[in-house]
Length: 352
Image 1 (cartoon, rainbow, N blue to C red):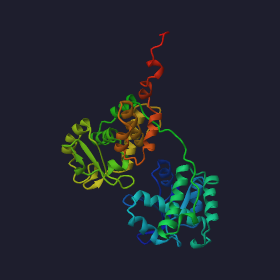
Image 2: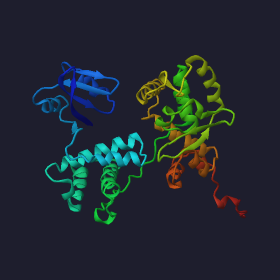
Image 3: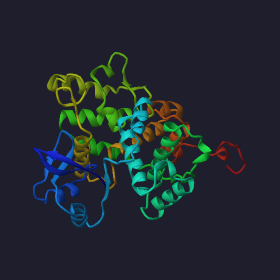
């Protein structure tokens, strides 16, 4: 796990601010540190400054943490500016920033402009051999480096080209229709039910359902408008009749003001809260699969394919740029393959 660490001040007192992806085990360990405070608005944990704090925390977490200092003297301000000018999403900016900070930390004794192509290759080899990065994380690291040289500095690709790792050919985890039904039946809260039903019914990403506005639900046209999704693409998806029936009492009960799902007026419902109640529903359903919110999206696509929906329409609904991305679902369907008839069975042979 990676933790962003930077110096901060609370009420004039020097402290260390820690930011990391939500993890219950990490939080329970931090709660054992005396004087720690949580800033819910900034999603930081603040710890009173003390000498050798870095070593103390590493000992507390048994050396499993990787610290990245948020303020780096060599971090080029134009890096973030260029990302924003090119309209990259907040999530992508955060990912690129973290990976580029790691890159800078690795070469902390070398000027950024003096880093050679061969040194970049050695850094990527370090990520694979020492840090055991997954293929996805390797690609993110490469993208963050490429962005700086290509988009910020405008250097030609051949001068710093780095080979891409082969992407693992893993099939997505998919739930059967019976398993989806079991999970959905565990959700009784109306708001929670609307969120999860909507995700499965339209194959939405978690961030997409969180960013839905009231105006995006077009009940008269039976469709939902998904704006600025992955790759900054807009698209329309289907609005289920079942979901529409749920949304009507939901509107009356919760009275959302701007976002379709809000924790408070005009404040979006959090990703973390959705993941938490969905995980609870999976546990209650006794499904022995590592099902996540994104598993519902994979299941949506697979079930459509099994019911005979053309792959091109599924590609459009999912917002995939390439049909090759959507074709992975042909490898996990059950009934679609069982309905394929061998050409031999169509021949009129004497021994039949």
